[in-house]
Length: 377
Image (cartoon, rainbow, N blue to C red; front, side):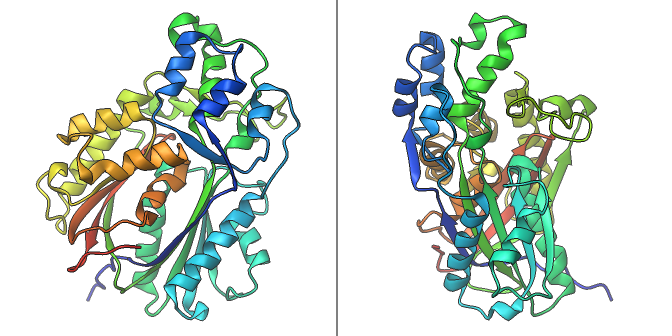
């Protein structure tokens, strides 16, 4: 007889943020003389009001050529989040059978984030399995939930510790020149504008969660995945250098971004949600029926496009967490959807939808079932 697949239950969740936090107004003030009026307006309308950085002097690094002063290492963010999460979950640490380290911006390429976590956390069982889920970008939570489903189904009585950690601000290119809006530059200068947007949109954070076969928190249903529907979608956004094809990097690694990201991202989200709604365990007829709709915070433009496609008002309570996390934390890649889950707000009983999509290009969508009586972290 086939074993029924286990839906992971959220037993505990905790966040850790760098102390250094910078408002958009502060960054715009630091960039005066470097930005055209039109570009300033665009940067002020990304939907981000503030962001945290592992760098203590982030504005000066961006615009004044300062040497980066690291306030905290990304692995230390991960470890702090993990320890807070384990304390809140109140479970025997010996029951952790798998530790997932999830990052697209680890502190170093080798050893991986999860191995560095083990080195700093002697309380973790030395015999626990460990796995790195790295460079999956903003769709990482779907991969983590899928992995936990498989592991928990095969290992009764065990739990999974997942730690998402991103430190993207140190990778933002310095901005010593003058920069203009996309509509004001030619194709050969477009990358300069992408570099500026990188400095304003992305930010740093860590979120840890413990997943188990049972618990009082919400459970996560099957994951629907869609990856590279068109082969060329893999080129919508890239970090081409720093790998074995281009091992020598002059300055910070490049980050490219196609103007097609918004429409293609909306397509992936819509199509993958459609697939998820067909799952036998899904009780929803449409995204508009969800008790909560948590969507990756690519930008306010992308969120607005998704709301329109899903037939949900951007001011609706079911999507407020997506806009609020973008506003208060920026785009934190794989940490964005976990940050929404960690918000200290009451979630009513019912079935919600979580949408995690991003470069590579991929999307993962799954349901979240909140038990009777509701739930709050």
